[in-house]
Length: 522
Image (cartoon, rainbow, N blue to C red):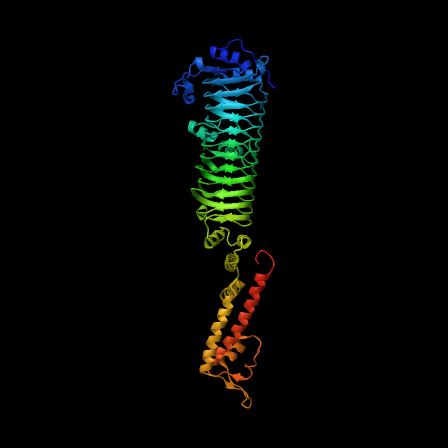
């Protein structure tokens, strides 16, 4: 830990802060004029409102101790803080609470330990808090951060409040200023500036962050991405009314996130992909009322687990990936999938929403990678669980029809025949209909042109219906085939009936075997 520094000369404003620290008293340098006190204009504040960052850092590192019976703390409002506030590796002796201040340098809390950090309504250049521990509230509500926040592997034992902020990525701020990023980054194997480029596009770089309380980003405007890969947000994360405009591919990158509730709802807007591959959400992941846009894939939620997914956005553009995820309740609507949708491997316990069977069939049939049988089987299993057996059979029939397009010509021909005759076994009444049509046609035809008796001495009375039925049955039951010989064009009809009988029998057996076969397709 760096030793605290003492100062021989302090400005009047610094002297007030120095004297107030042991008791944690407030030092308010504001004038009362809202326009004058706006920290965005803090660069023009005079010496009467200017405090050096090194003075604040020295106090927080222990230059002055708490008075007996008191609680030390840095509480400062309306100040212009010059220089870098370097608190890295420090154990802060008091809470840090700034309101309406302008800090032109970087705030560094890397590897620091603090009882609480509150920077409310401030204008900040950049916050670095990687691997820091905050045993209390970490609050940046209402502040503007021009070059991003870094909180990778940080631990916040309380709430993380980032609401009503203006938060920009470092790369975005550097482009506005016409310069390179100020903070150097280590190089990655993927390229000389791969990691630097990734971090420069992220307004919040917080992989591995742990927050025991709730995390709030409500009504926050973000230019750049939010990176929360591997974060553990036990109290949930809430982004109601927030707007995230990605400067890279991802608006939100939260692979392997562990979280209670995730709220992208009620006015949330994202331009860029929301990626939560492998996330574990112990409550609800909600996109109710959100507006989501991306040039390619707008939602990547594959290999995730969640108790409930509410996919009812106010507007959405792009592809959705739910493949290999496990969802308790899926509440959605057809308009939530304007492009392709990956559903292979998706398992859900219940479906909710304003859907009919035809719309659900269209839903499972829109995989950009082609036909996948599992989404049909999962949907059919759901319909069977709620007692909708006809709908389940309709889904399984659609699965077989979709599969037919992946077969070779011979397989497609046989599949088409099975579909025509018995609906792949899911419409056995078609076989009865075909049999009735053939029986009627044969009865009428053979009644008009009866066959001749093969043995003239045998006493028999010709019955057109019985003769036709005996031709349709693959094995002669009524011994009519050997007793009568069709004549003229009825010979072709007789052969057609015999062949049709074998086809009907084979199709019925094949369809029944498919329907009765144990497994999800049954």
